[in-house]
Image (cartoon, rainbow, N blue to C red; front, side, top):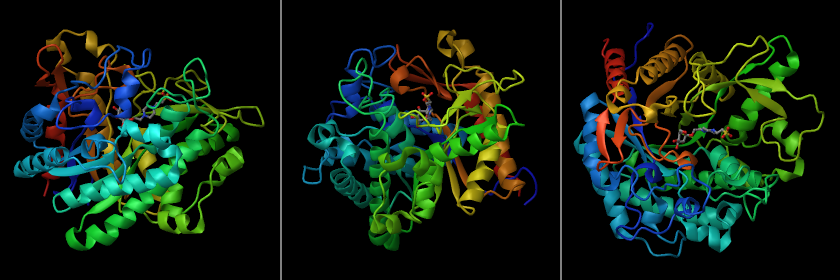
Length: 481
Ligand code: GBH
């Protein structure tokens, strides 16, 4: 294939997540989510908001589908709210038919519009009851059994309609943000000024382990019971940013870059493709890192039909001189910086403190993943940006989001290069996000949508320039026969 073309069946579209867009948290028998609890805890969400209404997509889903159609999108990634399906969460708890029906209707509406559904089973909204009962993913066996049962219920309801399934969205975020920094639900960490409970040195590693084991058992079930009947594919979505050395001439910084990729990506990727954790993590974390039993290791190895890739930005990495890493270090004993030794910035500021665009990093990371895991099929499940102070703009200016349009042009271009020039097997791309939405601890002040959502006037939707730009780009890229 020559430069700058994508196949006609390239899966492109947009992504969202249930808690960030649905609202309607008390409707149709939905149970309590750990994010309801976290948002109700004073001091946790920047603008003191929650997902109580969000984008109201529970009611306005047809508008969402119309938006997708209007730009020509081929696919839509959404997540399923576990507490809508099994309000208390557990394997012996009642299933809520009304919750299941909502997703069945929604998927039927997507299919009627000619849009392929990509479903995520877990985008962070754990039924709150499971934390109370046994600590959620801190308890591997209970969590795995409950998650597999929930997955089975959804496979049975949607197995004939949904052909791409994602077990967990960004296990790194669940583990680190939820149990190390405590800035996401359930908000646990060692800092007693922030959380009454938690241990930042041990719990993230336990939680990550549980998620991997639950993923493996869910994939086994899908492959045994669903695949023969319906075909379809299943994988896990991992987040990961690119890295450049602070001092490219210092081998310790170059080495630290690899370590950073291993601590953020290979922590989950290596078990999924090789059956065990990277040596660098084992070395630093020692016996705080759980071990896979032989059975678990065999089960988890090879448990991706495709690699779900979320990617946003890049950092400069500088090694630390201290020999022994701090006990609560989770990055690989190094510093993340926005400037290199020469004082050059990695990319422009956005509204998100962690996000600096650096599009060539996307291409480099696609190649890195492709090499490390022997050319897996990659589905980009998220990529996007916020804009500095976008929320303060008058609406007419906000709709002209040139910066976001530029970001997507650069990043999609980098992906096309990775596919066409480097031979990376990327089969799809889902932009984050279809809508401005509840940006977790940052509330609604940070917008990631290609659609402006007017929270003050009935959550009405107004497409931004970037929506059209993405539509045009993919239409061109996929139409060159
Ligand atoms: C995605 O995560 C989420 O899947 C999505 O729900 C969210 O809305 C979207 O990004 C935009 O944020 O706080 O300095 O430790 C993105 C991956 C990785 C980005 C961790 C924030 C936090 C770094 N995230 N990162 S820090």
